[in-house]
Amino acid sequence: MLHSLSTTPNELGSAELTLLVGGTPTPVQATQSYFVYARMAAAAVGPAAQRVTLLQSGECGDPALAGEPAVDADDAEYTG
Image (cartoon, rainbow, N blue to C red; front, side):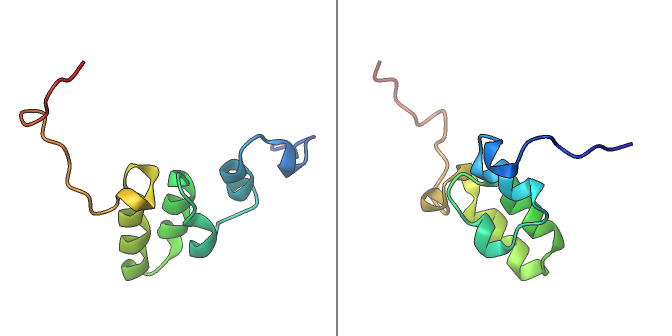
């Protein structure tokens, strides 16, 4: 049997967790930077084209990095 939380959503410590606890996030809500799980939840119920957009824009958790080429370990240079 599930019991309700004795805490309010704003006391969960994470905006993404609060969003997920409130139900399935909308695509607009899920497109915040680093909201990986919210993007996955919104993509799970959206149309195929929207799923692709949500999941691709969430690469590495930062939409600014979407589409950036991956670093090949053989080409990387150690500078330390």
